[in-house]
Image (cartoon, rainbow, N blue to C red; front, side, top):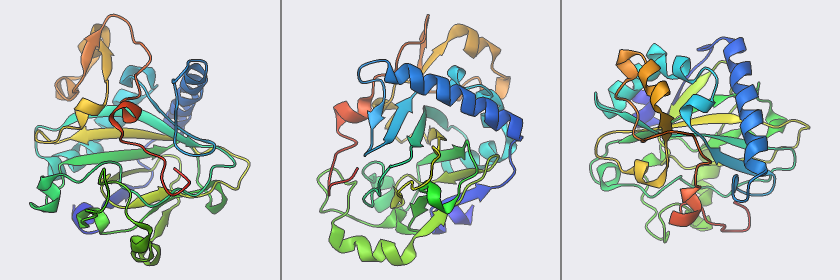
Length: 265
């Protein structure tokens, strides 16, 4: 898995059937409408850009997605045998979404800055065929190891550092059926969506045992969902059992994981 350690991202094309991805897209569209109807149901991440956390069983095909041998193999290789899924959500840049500042998704832990070890992963699964006009995700390979100590929350590097990211940037033109795994510490950004189409992306967060990202999320599951899981997934979720799925509280806002800086996030 040299890509994760060297560049901060690896991808697998044609991992899933298009019909599965289209079903996933239907779930995202429905859940976003429900989130919009509730106060605080969707987290703004800049103009015309939203993030919503959901329960895994609300996404059609979710069990099939995380049952893929590539998904399992990447988690095992990078995080070790005892990894857990801690977050399920989706990000949607709509037409008019603007360029984000360079950032990482949370402060780098000592395991990475001092131990040079990745202890969490973010998987992205696009619901559409991405074109350059749709505001593709950009990543600055290798920057998961960077120290950005000037940041109060360890997320948004000073603009004086941006030249380093600009010369490294790689747009990711993901297509339906492809999936990527990355360190959320690798410096990245969403770009401006100048098309007429939304670009929804499913996000799955996975932790090694020594990571603490589960504390910032509210992964809910019903007992019926848990009982129906295949044996190899039965202990792979770090969440709580509920009688009924409720809207996920957007802990990013409460914990300060997302903050508006430099006029654009």
